[in-house]
Image (cartoon, rainbow, N blue to C red):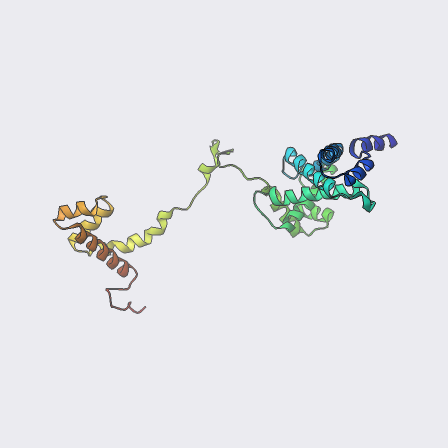
Length: 269
């Protein structure tokens, strides 16, 4: 046991007391920068070990190590040996806090409330504890609640938060669907459906238009002719076609909205 503690001490907690004392006394410059880098390198294995505690968070180990290293750098820069506390007691919560903030702010593809994130963590801990019982069936919400101290409703919220760390790409193949991409199995709103009622209501109004207005609307909106081309067919100027279009569209809009001709109040309901 003592040998294990000694090996861990050598690997994770080097004696840098003198280095920190000298670091606090040195002015900014090349010598201080070199000493600072040596201290960071000496404590880096501890930072990497702490990052492994969060390997089930959904973040890659490389990202976790980088965040832990950043937390270590912050701890080295903020540590004051004159306060009399060991560096490790200051560095561990600093690194852990940096990792927790990163996971809270960046590891979730879909943002959920912090309480649900906490419930997810508690549920995962309970699942891990129950995983040692050797049962083949997953634990029930009641069993998880008994182990975690949560209510069954809170357990369900924690379970619901389980799958939001990562979202699937729309190109991801869907098993059981002939390996179609996910995008081809998703429905979407058909914007044309919103126009069905309007088109049905507009049909009798279009039929009631004079022939010339019908032709102008058809050639402009379905024949893709310009106002000048329509005017040439009807033997009138482009300006007249523009007025016909404006007048006809305004009339149809009023009648479609039940407002009737200009100057007339809408019919009572």
